[in-house]
Amino acid sequence: MITLTDTAARKVKELLEAEGAADLALRVAVRPGGCSGFSYEMFFDGDFAADDEKALFGPADGSVQVVVDAASAQLLEGATLDYKDGLNQAGFAITNPNATRSCGCGQSFS
Picture (cartoon, rainbow, N blue to C red):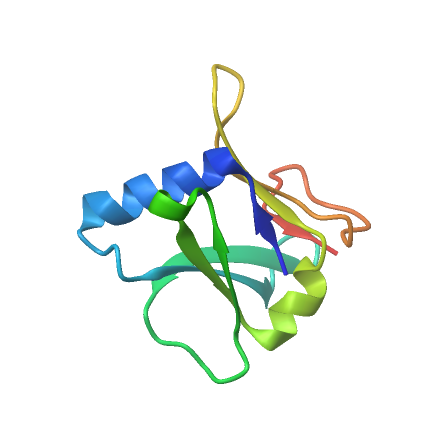
């Protein structure tokens, strides 16, 4: 299961509140495609399958739920989702120890 840094959890919470959708979860998935074989997909979701893995991240008063489907969970084991907001890098980034290589855009891996 992927983990979220506190910074990423706060940003996800902020985005959910901005959408007026605090009851939704962040779904993180791995899909075939991209330059290197697999690509990451993230979106807000309220439709869960029986075999989805679920976890809460962030402080108790501001936690967000993350959902990962069973197939993606294997590829995301030990991965971390972070959020950066700086001059050189801004946005969400996944650090995945299971990726043997990634493309230049950082959006796909194998």
